[in-house]
Image (cartoon, rainbow, N blue to C red):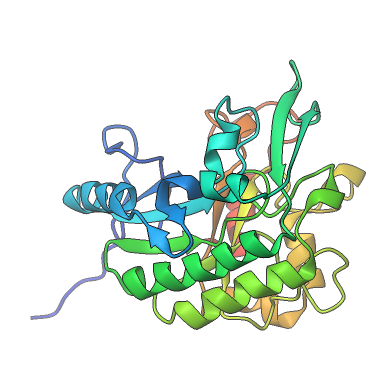
Length: 288
């Protein structure tokens, strides 16, 4: 029997739009769901883990016929429970935190930030041990599509802009990437920022076994030549070199449509001059 070509369904596994956890098929077709997890939900002491919150999420997603993407983080700007994202035992053990307002992330009242000291050896130990335990339990788990590396910076997005002095050093970044590479051989891990050997703030990753996620997709994906877009995803990808530019052929590329573009980006006229053409961004990044 000769089969005729037909387009793949829009909810093709591991491709397409991804909503937050829940069944949104009444609004958009999708094959994956996304969720944040505070590190404190999963790590209860040195070497002691509670996987039940993650298990509940993975089982619920799987029962809907989907696969999961998740990210573990310690900072969620503006959250009234910011301190609760950091495991209590680390705070009791002396982990220092920086608490400060940041008005750059909101047009209203300044958001309160709670940033841990990422150079602290106790926190670095927890990061490495947690990644190792996570990989031992979940690498290759069919309920999981991708994991975003997380752990560092606001929303686990690997930045504390504009307080760049509070962000993790390259040594800490390398430790986290080393741990992910050692612990995950099957489940893809995605990084926020492409980086080459000469990047001033980020440890090189273009030759490592990671994909990427652009969390300002269709906002600062393509460099417009404007000063505010100099850190665009495609600029960083290009500067990181051929290894990063060709990464889409062997590793997944994903991201998050910038919240300011939600509900607008697919309109014929999305309005405003910051929202970038969605299809142009897809073609440039080869996002899956």
